[in-house]
Image (cartoon, rainbow, N blue to C red; front, side):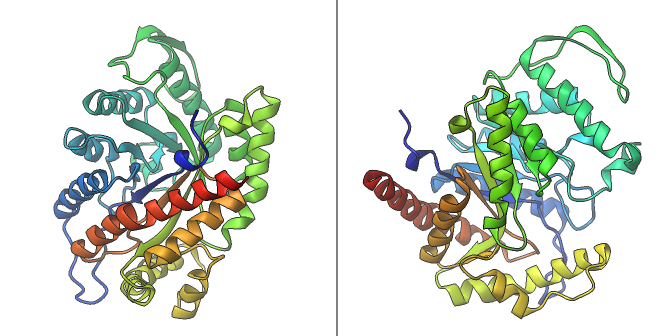
Length: 357
């Protein structure tokens, strides 16, 4: 039987940032960023990381409009790492094509694909694909229903309000995994936690501000909803996605990660009307032990991940590298350190804790 220690997965998530370098002002091409991503996934597999996720965005400052294609490019070049979207903006996509894309990755990788379904943190995909934001919630609920129907049955009969009906049609290829894993991604919405629990689906929380421990009530909501629906809360998987970076020393990591993070957070802040610019003081506070930024040396990151496990009971941790453009060699080194230094410390300490309980 799997122990709590050995089900703690650690991996990388990215939106394939293609923002101006904060120092040189040069902008990496989308093509180069995509090739870099495949190299990162291969390295993550080699250093023993458990999962790599690519988020879907439709903006000039990100290259990840088609996560499935990026993951497929790496699927045949890797051996054990799980390959997931982070997230698939299901509301503005076709669940049939989403399933087909990820079942194809599942076949190429021999059973390592996952879908992380969410509404997305940006809204560009809605007008791009002809959807109205007035239907924001209804679109997600309807399309999630269809996606789950597709993964549970080879032939599907379905009718909804935002997509042509399907009348006893087969959807192929079928996934190697049965069922193909589908996660619900949430930025902290209670309704999302309850929905995931009722459906018995794993959940991933994006924690990019405040203190991660404040998500504990959402975890409780999730588990209670699952139990009420007849699912075993002890078998549920909970992931978190947090910005961060690992370096040889905490000071080095903090200095390397600050400028690109500041640049991108200020862009997003202006778009969303946050008002105050992102400062070094804000950044340093978020790097504290109870803060949302996971930036530091391997020992410090391990300490923060173990605290997160204690507070939220997470079974998977995504380190989002990078928030803004950073030198590719630095990103590769961070991935190497996460796999060879951070993960072993976390697993050893969790095994020790479990042995004493």
